[in-house]
Image 1 (spheres, rainbow, N blue to C red):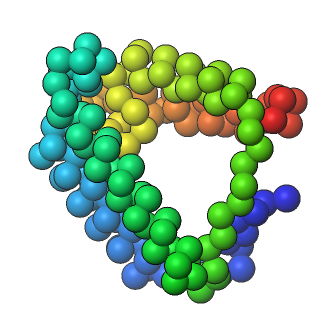
Image 2 (cartoon, one colour; image 1 turned 30 degrees about the vertical axis):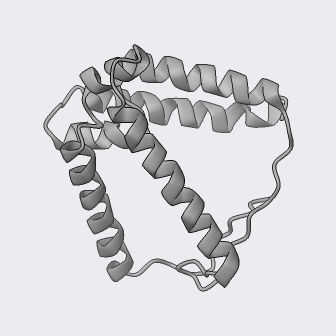
Length: 150
């Protein structure tokens, strides 16, 4: 059963324009902060610079603030439905395995999901291969997720 049912209402053109604009702003922020730079990522993993840790830390803090605001004020989504947070089942194995797979993909491509699109927008055309590979991986996961231990 899908916990996030959005089939009731369709997005209007205004919503798509808003989402597209937010994506463009995200891409500009990623580019200007150098978060899409393989060299900055390399520095981070070698513990040579605080730059990427600062960006990730700010993102985590902003996420915490947003969750606090959503919970405190019962914020609604674009379909006017209350946003609910569901408790997750504790399972270290699946998080470790998922982290390894994510990390391998990041290491092989040089980018995590957000910067993939930003790099493509910056003219790094080879990212099309990475994006298609990520989509294929997501599709395969969808096919086998019921057979995996969750």
